[in-house]
Image (cartoon, rainbow, N blue to C red; front, side, top):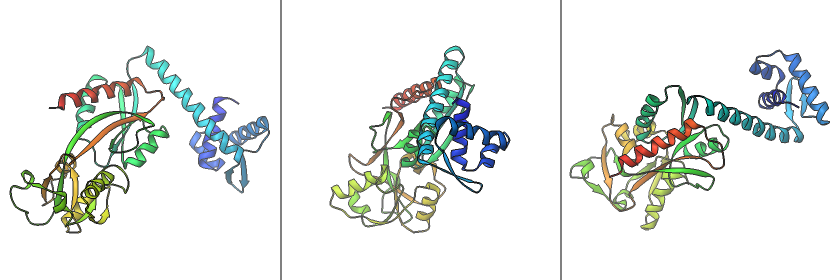
Amino acid sequence: MDLKQLRYFIALAEELQVTAAAQKLHMSQPPLSQQLKLMEAELGVPLFNRNGRSLELTASGKTLYEHALTITRLMEEAKAEIQESGQGLRGKLSIGINTLSDERLPEALSAFRRLYPNVTFKIQQNETNLLTKMIKEHTLDLAIVRLPIALDEFVYVNLGAEPLYFVTCEERIGGDGEKEQITYDQIAQYPLVLPSTEGLGLYHLLLDQFHARGLSPAIVGECSDIGMLMELVSSGFGSTILPRTSLQRNRGHQLQAYRIEGPHASSSSAMIWLKQHYLSKAAQKLIELVEQHTKSADP
């Protein structure tokens, strides 16, 4: 069984239909069906159960699929590493960003682009739990996530912390808006829509801060889409808590913002990638650049 056959098999396992897999591979159906028969004959076991035109992986097929993904990924990584050793920096970087995105990435990417114009980017936005899953599945090279999360499986660069703000459509509590501070005790009196998924990242951090003070906040909802979250707050649905970056990027609403008091009234973010996994030269260079930007931004 060769690498080409494994790629054929992966397409079949993902499409679960010979016609669709053939279209994905840009080949005709009969040769693909023939390759499947040859693989099953070589292995001596059926890889799929047939149900009309549909396919269903057998237990043996599921095992081969897992190995096929690993083998083809390792071959692609080896090819990329060999090519990079003799060529200028090039390729595509897949980067994930949290819905509470970090303000330093656009600046770092612009600087990187000037240095390495042959590298292109695919940037996806999602919640932290999905970004970590995509890193583990090798769909993403790097991701910027909000802490705290479990980092045992990742290498990371801490991007530092930024202050948290209480955001509401209520009339001013008093003072000069963002220059005035508010406590968690005061915030607990408002219905809240939290900007994260339960149990992860910022959501977990905020609940910890309330519970540490013996407070039980009135959480009326969660929303990881920051644009929608700001609309909800503007409509009076509830108030929220946001890092400074998110607040600054969504100023098109008539809202009041107050910095939260206390030593733990901040949110940290990190750039992560998978441990014991080949990282392209382009990814390594971007990490170095982000680290430089982070250090230069430190007071």
